[in-house]
Amino acid sequence: MQFLKSFYIHNSFFRYIAILAACFMLSFWIPVLYPVAWLLTFVLLALFFLDVNLLYVSGKRIEAERKLPKKLSNSDLNPIAIRFTSKYAFKTHVSLIDELPIQFQKRDFEHKTSLLKNQTKDFEYSVRPVDRGEYYFGNLIVFASSALRIVKRKYVFQKDQMVPVYPSIIQMQQYDFLAISNKLTQFGMKKIRRIGHTQEFEQIKEYVQGDDFRTINWKSTAKNVDLMVNQYQDEKSQPIYSIIDTGRVMKMPFNGLKLLDYAINSTLAFSNVALKKNDKTGMVAFSKNIESYVPAVQKLTHLNTILEKLYNINTAFTDSDFGMLYAHVKRKINQRSLLLLYTNFEHISAMRRQLPFLLAIAKKHVLVVVFFENTELEELISIDAENLQTIYHKTIAEKFSLEKRIMQKELQQYGIQTILTKPENLTINTINKYLEIKARGLL
Image (cartoon, rainbow, N blue to C red; front, side, top):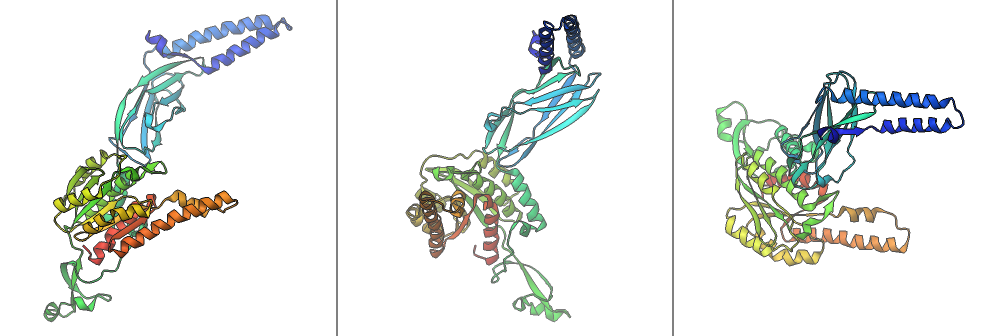
C-alpha cells in the first residue's frame, strides 16, 4: 500500500509510449518497423522494472527539511530555507513541491534540481505575508527520479508546520540599528535644531566653535584656563503612547496591506526607537471599546509585551468611539504624554465630528493625529484627462485630496500636531515627528 502511494509515472514515460505507438502505426506501411517496435517495447519494459528497482530497492534514500523561522514578519520578504540530501548511488533528479499556507493563494510552487551521490543542496525562497496570524505550511513533497526518467518516487516530509506572522520585526530591527548608530538621516530622519533649554543637564565640557554662548558656565570657566559650557541632552523617561484606531476606516488596503497593519508596524518600530532613547512607551487600541491597553514603561523587555498585544489586534467593522477614548485617556494617563493617534479621515465632516474629543485630549497632552493620503487618488490625479469621464474622476479625486490638506491645516490651527503621510512612509514620518517634538521641548 505504501508502495502504491509513493509510485508515480514520469512524464517522459508517456513520450516513450507515443514513440512506440508511432512505430507500430508506421509499420503498417513499413513492415520492417514491426519487429523493431516490439524490440523497443521489451526494452522499455525492462528499463521500467530497472528504474523501479533503482528507486525502491534501497529503502528511503531522499531526506528533506524545511527550516522555518520562529516568527514571520508581516509585509516583509521572509526567507524560507529547504535542505535536501540524496543517498542514492547515482545522479537523482528531484522536483520539490512545498504546500504554502492558504493565505498566499499559491498552488503552483515547484522547484527542480538534480543531486549527485550523497550530495546535499540548500534552496531558499521568500514569502511576503500581508496578514497577521497563524500560517500553516502543508506537506513538503519531493519527487525523485533516475536518469531513465520512467517512474518517480514520492517522498513526504514535515506535514502541517505552523508559524505565526507578527508585526514587521524586520522593519523594527532596521530602524533599531539606525537609531543605535545615529544614522537615522539616511532614511529621511531630520536633524532638527534645538530650541530653548528644556533639556536635561548632561555634563560640563570645553567650549568649541559653534556652542551657544548662553550655555557658558562661568564658575567652571573661572576654575579652568579654558572656556567651559554646559551640555544638555533631551529629557528622558517621558511617557509616549501609540493609540491605534481599529475601526472600519483602518480596513482600507494599499499594496495588499491594510492601514491597520501599517499603523501596527509603525508602532512597533517607533516604540523600539523611543525605548532606545530612554523614554517610556505604551499603547492603546480602540474602536467601540478599549481593546488593548499597555501602560508606558521604560524597559527594553517591555517591547515584547507591546509586540504580543499588537499581534492580536484586528480591525472591527464599526465606527470608533472617540468619546470613550477621551474618557479612557483622562482616567488612565495622568502624566502629560505624547499621544500618537493612528486613524484615518476620508471626509472633513468625519474629522469635525471628532474634533471636540481631540481638542479635549490635546489640552493635557501633546496629541499627534496621524492619517493617510489616498495614494490611488494621487495616481488618478496625475494622469492626463482624455475624455469627459476622466475629467470628472480627476475633479472628484482632487476634491478628496484637497480635503485631506484642509483637515491637516484645521487641526494645526487648533494646536494639534498632524502627520499626513503615504502609508509606505508612515514609520519614517512618525519617527521624524517624534524627534522634532523632543528637539523642540514640546513635551
